[in-house]
Image 1 (tube, helix red, strand yellow):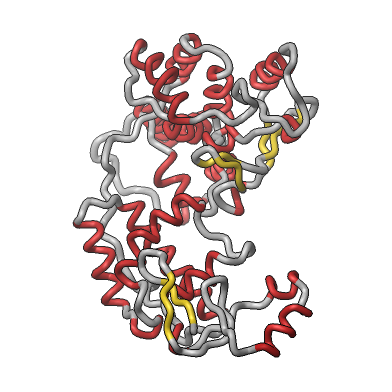
Image 2: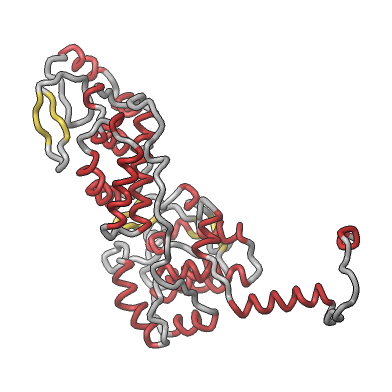
Length: 371
């Protein structure tokens, strides 16, 4: 008798005999195998992939492989469970070899047409790719991933992207109370994600050297690793931010070491949603900036860093992006005043301050331009 994983997460019994696979499958007849498993250390069992019978090489089995081992990094657990709610009803009972690119493409487009956002559909496609890659790595699937050929519709921004100018940042900070004021200051001057700010510990700060290390993050109230591998990074702290953090550290009874820099009265992490709705949004409305959000602070950092003379690689390192295209395409916005200033400088270089005379003969040759 063997337990199989059903779409809704239930286990039901069948009479197919298969080797041991995960917590939902049991082979009562293999007494000798049981004895050998008792002699096998827990560490060895964790290192070896589960054995999957050909008849049970379904997407459910691959999901258990992809999520049951700590070295397989996927999305945050909460987001992962939400994505599985979409994937399992469509593919949960199918064998991996029976899932085609056309089916996955149809599934993604159907979810997109039903109102799911572009980012969510992209997460679903990436999650399916991870599942098939994991199954192929452990020998449960022999072909290329059918999700690799799936294309998404053109991404259209749902709303206009905006950033705060330096005067607006200063005005907003003047309307905020501590510790939210220092949090927003940290977001604008370093580009940290809100989860990285909430998960910041005193041991991650080196105020003497003016450095900050991103080692953990808070996601929906739970502490965990940062979003991506590139998110673990060391960032410089400007002098104004060092002074603000030193003031926070000098507060009576302020804990140190592994304690959070911005804890609640109970010592736990704040809720980013509560901070935004109860303190940041009301202060932003008072100064005519109702669109302000935590994400707008990261976009502000990338844009103002460019205006201050920072390169695109500097912005990528600050934001912790794996791809520079994400930094340039999503987070860095052009500033009209800066564009005009740059064009005027270019005009001064080209014309040397003088206008071209109309009909003044032929242009320069390539050899003359290179001189």
